[in-house]
Length: 371
Image (tube, rainbow, N blue to C red; front, side, top):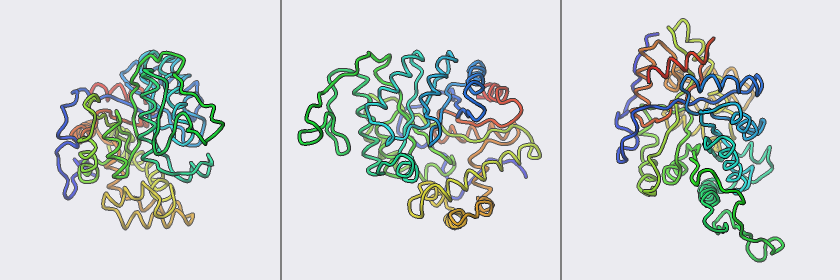
């Protein structure tokens, strides 16, 4: 295949957040750290990555080991790199515990915590945590408010919202609840909060109140058409005290000619099928809805039908190659630089990559030299 700058019908080159101040020129680098080989090996890799310029390591949770345990371990094994959760599901902890956890990691890391949160989905929340999946947008908004109030430590915590009441009001519980402050003084009164959001209302809420955005399957050429109105609506209501919204996006990174990297790009096919086809029931799959908004309605429906019937390989085969290419960074140096430029033009501030190859640390070092 010939590498090219991808173009799509109706794509516009204007940045997503045209009405906000210019971003810093330097694109930051981040990556989700895998701990499939064990915490010790992953921590050693993180220590090497920070030496060559990685800015943030993200730790996933899903329904595996909890993220904060590994984040604390990374804090002890690294010196400079920021340590982020990507993501902590909002239903698995109380709002104050989320605030306490982030403040604790920020303290032991010397102010290097990045709090990434998200609603996850009904399958995990109700199926694994046994908690009703309700009011995700309202809960996310209120959790952000509560976290910032806990960290600011200006007064005993009181919150009366649609989703959370702290302390519990009269008539609920024992009636003995008392408004309290966190005992410790947090290292920072404002720890950056990133939100994983895809739906239109959720993206608008995120753009209004969060410090950063963690989108998945981010196609820069289509981002303005798909997310632009929601981002604009949220930005119009954004508190002036908040900095410019940060955006972390990218994909699989592989450097080389097509004969060398084509099979690596294809590694994303199975994951894309899982998300588009299997992450939720029909009508309740946010990733499937995103694929439809990108213009792949027919493919998304077929992928979901096959995946939910157990035909996973057949579903993966239907993932559009165009989508895989648009959401990855696989190719020679010139092509990757073009894709990085497209992401930056779309407003991405943090290039979030998954380096695949014999020397991931060397790949990050090379990418750092380019951006």
